Length: 294
Image 1 (cartoon, rainbow, N blue to C red):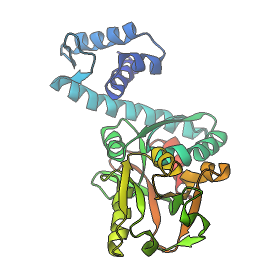
Image 2 (cartoon, one colour):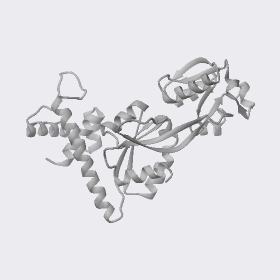
Image 3 (cartoon, helix red, strand yellow):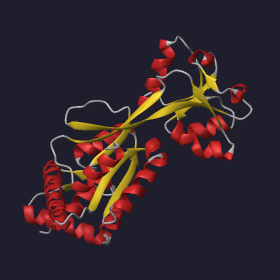
Image 4 (spheres, helix red, strand yellow):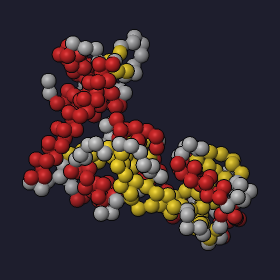
């Protein structure tokens, strides 16, 4: 049995797709199936549930144990490689990162480009996810690092703080706020407002600040991502509050106006999370140091 076979198995479970697992490992779907059958034959256990007509990947109890232990083996193997590279001062390997959309789309390209230029033998494998899935990906081992807004202390996870984002008010060019240089929370009372979905950390933070100042906005829509929120504001649904970094392109193009928020509380913490019980790879450690400004 080769270490590559364990990786194929784990990729299949993480990606929930034979075709994607095959693509990630540069083999055919048939080869993925053959390697899974070979593992089952070797250990004399069914690792995957097989239901006729269904293509989802479901683990048997034995498969669940095998998946968790394989992740441990793969992490140890990666650590071995990183330690050997470290002896000659070379940083390489792939760092799997699960990241929320708003940070990934607007802030990560700069960091990834800088990191790849500094460490050309290393690679950042970035996947966009919702906040709850980012934490699950890191805890399950599907990702070595997670990047999310408003990171909360959680058992089993270590948090490294990144520079926070300043939140700003956005509005269309013809809105009455468009000529303002700065707005106070009180100015938002009774204004049509485009929200994040209720269960997102950014929405909870905005609601908390509005409630503290006894301000009630008129909810006209709520979305799960910043891109849709920006489009809704652009076409006149109302105003919204988002991180400044997420609206730079629209401001340059003249499609949206940014208004500063007077209160100092309008900031969005951002952090990198990783498992506390595992030693992250040298490449991941360097990436965390870059993200946290060390």
